[in-house]
Length: 232
Image (cartoon, rainbow, N blue to C red):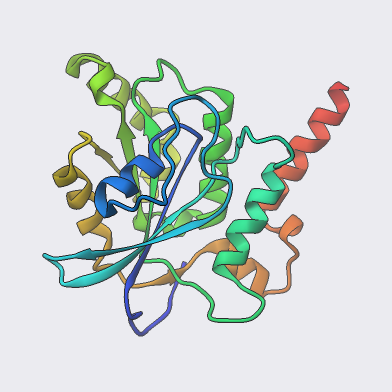
C-alpha cells in the first residue's frame, strides 16, 4: 500500500471474508443499520458492496464501513469475477474520487474445524488485493466463539496463526478474537480508525495500466477458471 499523505474526512474500513463469517452481523452490531440483511444459512445475503456510516465516539471520528461479498457467492449468476469488479468499482470508480482505506477486517469462523477450499481462496484473494507489504492494515477477526469451547477455539486460532494465516501474520497482519459484543467490535475497529489511509495493491496495479484480469487478484481467478475447464 502507498500512503495517501493527507487524511480523509473519515476513516474507511473494508470488511471482507467468506460467506457466512459474520461480516454483515459485525457491521449491523456497530451501526444498527436496518438495511443490512443478515443470513442464517450458507447462502450469501451480500451480493454488492454495501456502505454504512458509523461514528466512533471515543475517537470522535466518522467511519465508513464497507461490507463486501465473499469470493464464494452462492447467488445464482454471480461469479467471483463479478465480485472483484464490484470491489474495484468501489475503490476506483470511473468517475469520482478514488477510495483509500484505513484498514481491512478479514473475518473467519473459529467454529470451522478446518480451513476449506473456499476459505483458502478468500485468504489468497485478500493477500492479492492488498499486497504482502501492506498487511499491517489488516486485522484477521475470528468469529463464532460461542460455538466452541475456549480451549478448542484457542487451539484452532493457534493453528491458524501457524498455518492458513501464517503468510499474512508474518507480513504484520494481526489476529483478533471477536466475542460478538459491541465492545469487542469497537475495540477491533479502534485499532484501524487512526491509521493513515492507503491505496491497496490492486489499485496500484490498475493505475499502472493493468486490466482487472491482469492484476494479482484477477490472475488467481483466471487460473482457477482454467483448472475448472480442465476438469470438465
